[in-house]
Length: 394
Image 1: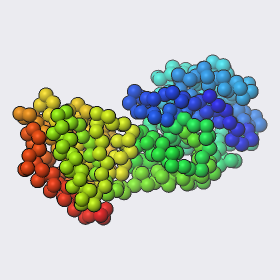
Image 2 (image 1 turned 90 degrees about the vertical axis):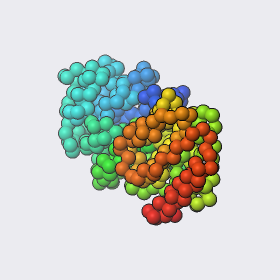
Image 3 (image 1 turned 180 degrees about the horizontal axis):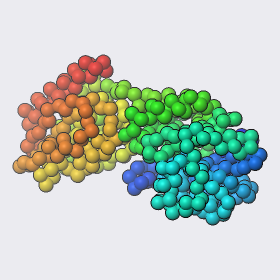
């Protein structure tokens, strides 16, 4: 737990969760995470923007008390997800006159998820203003970054954008403010890949809304604050673009080495053809690393043995996940080994309905890859290199 003065009358409450290693029972957190909330003290009113995870609600209240805050008039809820809203009920219990300021969609979610009663809400709409006395908050709707009810709160006099999950990063650090470093970039990219990537077609308009405000500082609710907003804005513009790299992501699982033998051969042939490769064994994979690679890869290859007449469960899981993340990948290939038969290839194809690119002819072989299978793998490497060349990557 930590508090930090950003500017006169503007404070960060940074709830550090160093030890957390999994989010949503799905997303690895190798660097932990933070839940950022902000206190703005006007001449007349005091506002709290967001709060902390339910797990840290009591600690959050202690930090709020450490700031000497004896009055909260407004609790701004930019997003209903419990890692940011979870402490709001305890805040309302302590500051009984406080009102929750949010949009209609967010209010409905807070009522159902946290059982906050109707009479605690003050509903706002697009571009509404809230005067705290010398500090004016403007509310702008930014849906699908990453829930439908999300909003951004702008502090007009100081040109600060409070963006909640938008531009965030799962990174526990006491470097509360950053100008941008490789570590921060990688954490933000991982966060984008895991959470924001499925909504990239809608993010562009929301970036424009933030840029139009001309912020001097972007304050997300996870990770460091950006003192140079262009650092994270330009990164997002790159990630949401249609640009991909001369990169093949090889996702494989191998039980008796036949798939691994094929993958190592294909890997070398791709390298020989000038194609970059990232090879991931799904039995030891980091979901976040895979998600990050999906942002960049022009081609994905999924390679699996046959298990009970279908694909290996890990191959099924990661294919399903890739489909959910809607990567901008242009080419897809499937490699399968089998003992006596099955429908692994068909099952994997059916798990990727969001893929709109070109599917290479699947490669299937019985047992260890024989000379015929090796020939097909070599031709696949050549085909991938040619396709990459055709789209200007080689």
